[in-house]
Structures are given as C-alpha cells and as structure tokens.
Length: 102
Image (tube, rainbow, N blue to C red):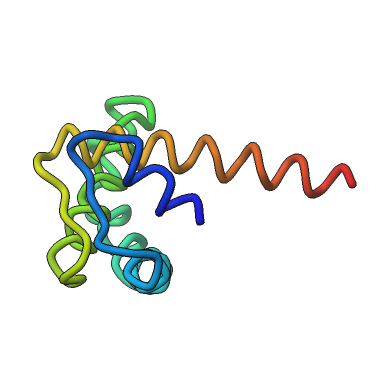
C-alpha cells in the first residue's frame, strides 16, 4: 500500500496498478534479503568513509534493480530512486513505530 501511494505521489516513480505494487514489495523483499548484504559487504570501506551515508546509495540501487525486474514499476532516474527509498524507509519506520506502540 505504501509503495502504491508513494508511486502516485512522486513524479519520477510510477506503478501500473495495485497488483504491480504488491509484486514490487515482494521483489524488494527478495532483493533486500539476497543482494543488499552482498552490496553492503563490497562497499564497506566507502560506507565507513562516508559515515554510513553510502547505504542510501545502496538502497537506491536496490530500487533501480527492482524497477528493472518488475515490468509495471518504473523509476526515471537515480535521484528519484534515492528519494523513493528515503521516503519509503521513513514511512515504514513511522508505521512500524506506531504499530509497536499499540
């Protein structure tokens, strides 16, 4: 649901429908499980050098990989992928924090 709303809110990100957004969530979960740890290990020196800010770049790369694999999900540029991943992480943290308090 969050992916669908964000894709309709951000101008550089689009999703064809609610079904495509469900597929995006599944593919993002799979990429975060398998690809993200590998990228984080490879980029550990630059992540330490940038005090952890390079992890935002890794998240944007994961979003762009997801857009490559899912036909109904389109991201225009790296910057939109970075913005999408930042807002998605913030909203997921907010929703997770609210659900934990209940």
